[in-house]
Image (cartoon, rainbow, N blue to C red):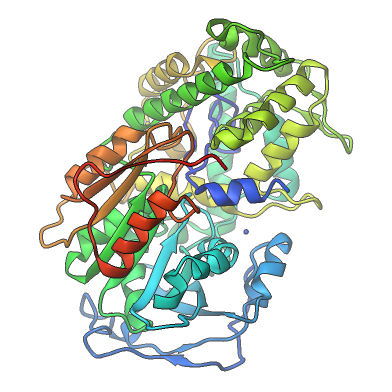
Amino acid sequence: MLRPRVGGPASPSRPGALPVRRRGRAAGIGALGAAVLVLVGACSDAGTGTDEAQAPAEPGLEQFYGQELTWGPCADYAPTTEDQPAYADPELDCTRVTVPQDYAEPGGETMQIALLRKKATGDRIGSLFTDPGGPGASGTSFMAGQASSWAANGLGDRFDLIGFDPRGTGASVPLIECLTDQENDEDRAKVFADPSPEGVAAAEAHSRQFAERCTERTGADVLANVGTRDVAKDMDILRAVVGDEQLTYAGFSYGTELGTAYAEAFPQNVRALLLDGAVDPTQTTIESTVKQNAGFQLAFDNFAKDCTTRENCPLGTDPAQATAAFQAIMQPLIDEPVPAGDGRMLSFNDAQTGVSQALYVSQLWPALQQGISQVANGNGDFLMQLADLYHRRDAQGEYSNMLQAFQAITCVNQPALTEPAEALELATQADEAAPFRSTGRGPVGARDACAFWPAPPTSEPHTPQVDGLPPVVVVSVTGDPATPYQAGVDLAGQLGGSLISVNGEQHTASLQGDPCVDRLAIDYLVNLTVPEEGAECTLMPS
């Protein structure tokens, strides 16, 4: 789940910025048809590993690497009410692992990282850790939903399947908290489309307010330590306390950023890394945002080519005019939102968010056509449902903290654009890269919440140094809108890894049921068989 900073609807934290998800396909489609809680007391089995597995990476961390785990039922770990049925599966068990809040002060405050596990049913190799993306997405929720299908594809025979909630997210403690449910609703309705100095000032005041709320409700000390650098160190503790000498890991979208960070910090502890939907660590904020906006424009153009061949396409019959037709439908929402059921109104922001949610996978194109047609006829119901799905708002109006965590993690993962000229440059380039998202009123060069964040970044663009890293595998989809294909090509080169090129129109592809991609991915994870050079798959229609 990656949200471009500009070029679309406003998020709570980024005026003029469209939330876009770095996530796997299954979560998005399935949702159309993830609480701070005490440690589970019911005793299952204690996880202990070998002395080698539990050796601390740095002095002072012995108590964390040597801790024993108490596993028990998962029911109380569900991050949202909608997650509860999946967490009730008796074949799943859960626990929390203690990690230092600040690795520079291991004797200070601590955090609790939530883990969810489905134990191996056959000849066990070890554990398979996963991260679904974000940043901010719940890994326990992801695995609760995927465990049965991954067990059926053979991974469950050989691995304990483990999802974890990175610090500040899901069922981990403490949570990143910035907005109330009411504030979330209010922020989604706001549109910062005025490029004048007064409009920019209003947008920046909104960004500053979000940063202040996060600081007040979460704490600057917590916000300073939720970045990828720290989660990678947590992952090594998780690896050790479940008893694995080396890490086997599948990371999707932002999860590839986590996998890369782990490879840099602990190359000697890697058994296998499957990285799908790559984030290129060398790209600057401006580069990555503009490239992603271009990726979504490509996805929109491909959707439009399909739509204009179908009956009653709201974009007409000429693909070359589709962006202009779409703008004519969407831009009036800036001043005149349309009804969306239950007394709610579909804003320009939510409409664009709903559209981008549907652009993640081509299977949703018919539904997207329907949603745009509804808006053209004054009805925002369907796009509001898609926007709610993206924002993780349930039927009771309650939100998960996923997007708030996204913002907080992003702000410590990369340098902020603190100069107004930089913000304007980004807004201008993004508007040019994705005209279907344009307000039609010119780029708003407002600095986002990261410019007002209480903690400095802990990472910056760089070429990863991974001496001693064993072979890794990167998967990249040619029509991936959120993490464009070339980033996967580049990451494979940077890590000295192998690339699986996938012809398709969706975000990420592995372990989702396609026989070609899954065969290569599972053979690598289980047998460490690296795909042949030039490995290529074409996604089967579903």
